[in-house]
Length: 242
Image (tube, rainbow, N blue to C red; front, side, top):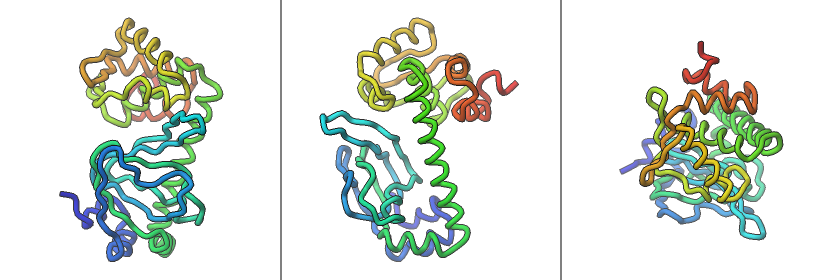
């Protein structure tokens, strides 16, 4: 059972020590909303167990998935830092245990110590880099290439062995479509093509990327040496590692 003492593993020591007295354990069921878009709340959450999905919902009901977050991740810090309404909806995709920290206490503690402030700054810069990457993909790449990028991102985020990665549970075709700004049918067509090429296969709730190196080269050919490819190179995937 996750404990608030686990904060020491996820936050810089000065920050964990400062917020521990005011942190509270919060439990959420799969499908339960942690925070809603435009909510005027400012609590910050550290994921101790489980996964959350960060998303936006358009007026016509279309879901736009921004990212998923797992143990150790931080959510809700934007509102704590700028006193503005929530910028996205966050929902539990599995049973989740979170440390809930009042926004004002988090901001004061994060900015009070150089180590904590640097950690938070680096985290925010990483988010900006990821958003820049997504903006590039949405505006410069075709749907097929955007899916290739997302699959490679899954491989890097979930881990791989040799030249193969197993994504489990496999995201549905609709969930993949929400991530790359398209419709389910387009994802289904491209996954069928990738399977025919021997790059992916599916079994039950598992999506297997059988040839990560080849997938990385396809992404490189379409997008160039973008940050995603640099990550792949650093992980030992693709010709950039030679």
